[in-house]
Image 1 (cartoon, rainbow, N blue to C red):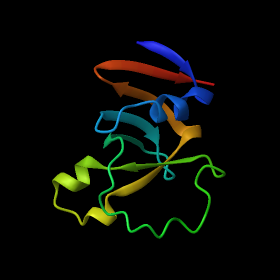
Image 2 (cartoon, rainbow, N blue to C red):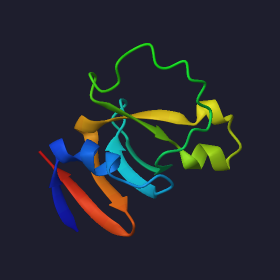
Image 3 (cartoon, rainbow, N blue to C red):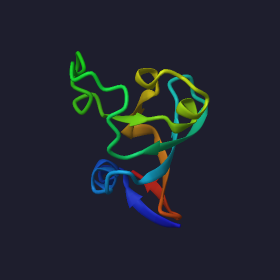
Length: 101
């Protein structure tokens, strides 16, 4: 497993090709650990309206939760926010990355 600094998490995800499926492990607001499978570059459930706040300013990454999509959840409800400051690891193309401060 490779180690990457926390400051590189956003750029690592931004550099993925559209359609790339990846996993992110992070700590949720309630303190529990979550492993989320997501896909880069999907437009499902996007209305073009935009967010009412600046996610980047708050250290959040918008991701499309494939587990919810597989359960048949509405597309617009499959979008989640991951806090960059609580990401523990990433798995991209079968390559794992531990995140350090």
